[in-house]
Length: 267
Image (cartoon, rainbow, N blue to C red):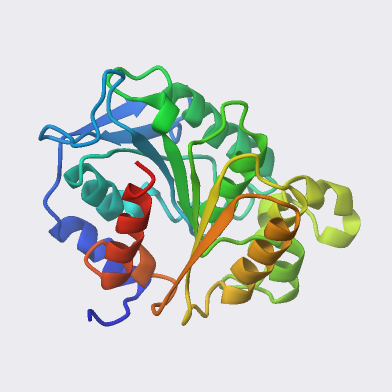
């Protein structure tokens, strides 16, 4: 089994993987409003009269500007190699001096999801959304808020409870959620609950994925959400893996192979 990896290893791996046909599309006026479309270069076993299914990818990094969609590029390549298109999106993130951007972030991912429906060759009825870490948080929000429901929402090591994550001081400095929201939870609890997945039951099926050795976003975040949503009658399935926070987005790892098989089973 490949050793558990770091964030730096994931970034380096992107440059080592063979790339598939990629088309960068600017879907909005702002510099960050773009996405990379990875299409299979061979006939897809999942092709039908409507096109190929597509998975919209949302990267993690605690919504910080320093992290980009490159984090999900290896997975985008792996998916297109398997016959599934990937729509690897960028969105508004926060940085020091430019905080409280949560509304722009959510608007961007919802707009990118809407743009996907306009692309030729994509079977939008079988299209999914997948996000890692903070991107997993956004994927769960889409499962509850998107007007066009995803076929499946896949949340990899997601932040499911903003209050619990803030109490645990997750992220490098422990204040990333407050920076993204623009305030601490005690100043505007109702605002925080509007974008708190555990308070927002999904309308789409959800596949929860988490590494048991994750110290960046503890497994408890996924376990609590899964129990709560199943108790409410939501369609939530789980896959717990032996890896850590970054092995699950390492397209060369055994953890990824297990995930890919589970995802393709939906097609």
